[in-house]
Image (cartoon, rainbow, N blue to C red):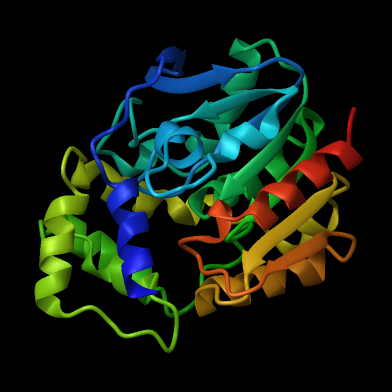
Length: 290
């Protein structure tokens, strides 16, 4: 499984793949995005360090690309600021809530009143901010491999370690370790160094660190979540990272009507690549048509 994690990361941090580029101005920041298909709109929010094309349409090692499951829908998939072909500010104040507002401005730009949102990992965190700030723009929300950010955990070690490592030019070793499921063999220091050189090729470490520093602004409150009326679904693997799994469980207590799908043997790195994940997403979209 360790090498599955590395394969995922290698794909996520590879040089961006070719794709038709569209973009718009989001309060002075260029946001690139994919716009494919026709029908009810579905916004796909990718995870940290990757891009819309790399995660949803051109993921190496994937036997079936996620976007192929969304025929009959209009797919809007932005590159979050700091990622892909979007601008990459170095100021942490340019991230956090601004990443959620980018999605709203994308809907405005695309002339979409309401959309389904599917967010994975960091994308799920951004979707959580959308859920409480702009419920009037949402038809449904699917949280994959994560969810809304409640009070940040007291032991914010993994995030703190990743920020420090990126800012010091030491790579993304903490990310590799954080995504390794419990019980799996940990990569050696030498392997981590080699992986980091490969994975950060073509990326902007300072922008990625700034995005991580902005995570605290994505936090939502218990009261905000309890007021949610938008249909919500959670999907995660049975071998999800402990910190994320605990966060999902805490949020679910505040959203008792939310649906939950657990992918057997799925990890944070591969759950979104499974047929079960695609089936759960499409089924939820169909159940909550406008």
